[in-house]
Length: 191
Image 1 (cartoon, rainbow, N blue to C red):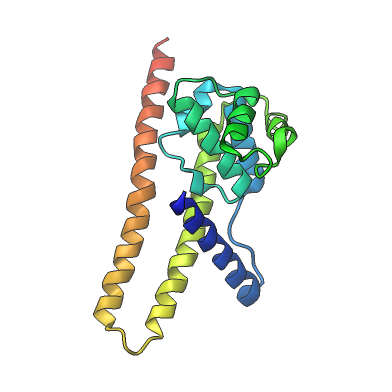
Image 2: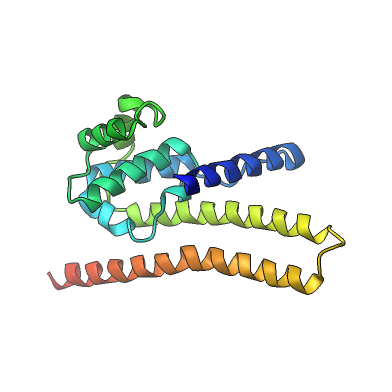
């Protein structure tokens, strides 16, 4: 919970900085987020294809984070992931209204006809998150670089560490997901 609150705070700060200084919104793909969640509601294979690499904070919209968190919870407990179970899980978590209500969740599945491209959609969502994080980190690095009291070598070490941690938390998870996708592709070809 604390991590999600920190992520939302970072997103809010990032959005206000970008809006005020650059007149730009942070990188996002809300349509792709909706199609991805809709794919996962329609196809259980879509859930298993993306769950290893996708984290709730990868979603830009807070309601989408909540829907995805409900899906992960259901999947991890061996329950089916569909409109009814996701709405029920959101209700149990006290997040149904924050996520847009039952109608908004059901509308997600109307945006797609299958879960066939879920891995591609997840990749786009992760890329947009990484762009937002790079912008946030660049802002922190820039702010620290303006401080005369900071040692330049310490700044470089800190910058390197921040970017390395971003890569470590996100890219490695994606490579595990790709391994799973390759195994599934081989199984399908063999069938």
